[in-house]
Amino acid sequence: MGSVEYLSKDILEEGFLKTFYPYHFFQKILGSCRVDARNRFVTAPTIWQRVYTTFCLVILIFVFVRFIIGYYEQFNSDKPTLFYLVTAMVTVKLGIYFSNLIHVRFFNGESNMKLYIKMQEVERLMKIDKDKTLNSLQYKVNLGTVIFVAVLAFVHLICFVIGIIEATSFYTYVCCETTFTLEISHCSNIVLFFAMRIRYINAIISNHINGNTNSGSVDTVLGIPTTNYLKHVAGKIHDFKSSETDIYLREIMRGFDSYKKLYRFQILLISAKLFLYILLSFELILLSMKYNVSNGIQLTMYSSVILIDFIVALFLCVRCELFTRWVKETKLLSISVMSIYVDGPIREKAKRMYNIIEQMPPNFSIYDMWELNARLLLSMFNVITSFIVTLLQFAYL
Image (cartoon, rainbow, N blue to C red; front, side, top):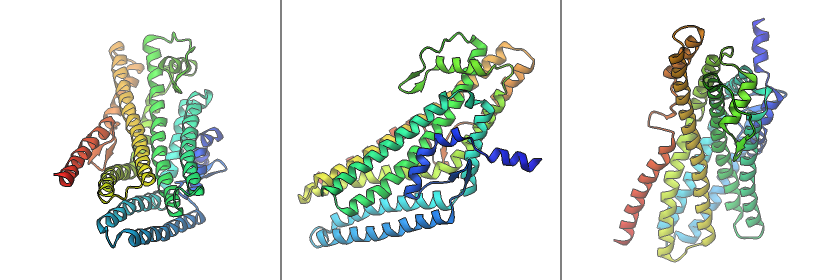
């Protein structure tokens, strides 16, 4: 009986798999998908998928060598500093691409599978499938993000076809930037998955405290369900007295804890990339102006890479901040319930929810160095600004 129950937990719903299908499809093409999802199961990447990933890595090494040789012949004789700087930028890009691809394909295969199974378990516990609001939102966000990244890659393809950029630049962008942007945006959208479930729990508790008087007439604002609409949807399916909201919360926090362990390496990579790439790009602009070899196309590409990374990181930080705030709201709502009921099962349930949050805080720590929240980019911006001022002083003073 135990094996049958274990098997049933591993079987994923078609609707759940469809939610993340845009990412799985595109990442399989790029050789960066963490799991192999098919026939309602998720497994670790197959041996052939890993061989394909290795092939992509080998091809990129040859492209990298050709790129460096081209710049060596062009700049090393009279502008060696510019050559070393470009080499450093490409090395950073390649190093981050290699680190990310090896991490997602060759490590934590079982843990990645368990994360998807845990997310499906949360769906079933909360009966999310009875109303398609949250899954529909998640699918639209995932699909929209993938389309946006695909459009950027297509723009670079057009630039390559009409001769604006070289083949090496095009291939490097498609492999390195597209792959990493997809991975970080996927990381961000999974945070949204957990955050919306926390908000759903808050709607259940709010209905119990204040009563469900919402008609649900206004459903979304900018694609995000409004609080009133979520309370309306939650009121149709759940009642705080009978719902196991403490179990919902516990499983969400466990899932988020697993997620943090799997994705903190990618957060470290995006932080390092933003910091190093901005400084190196700024120094490259200064040297290009100094040697009068500035290339508007190349500078535009460097700027677009930084801008896209910044936007993706901004969404990730904001969503982590929202998750933390909504968990704190759950904590306050639990206290409100305990203040209403002196004793009884409802008070005990609220107390268990309070203890769960105390035991599993929502903070996203990156290897105990910093926390992922809305203040992270501001702190990074301050540090980068200080370095840029220093570079300007060395260049012009």
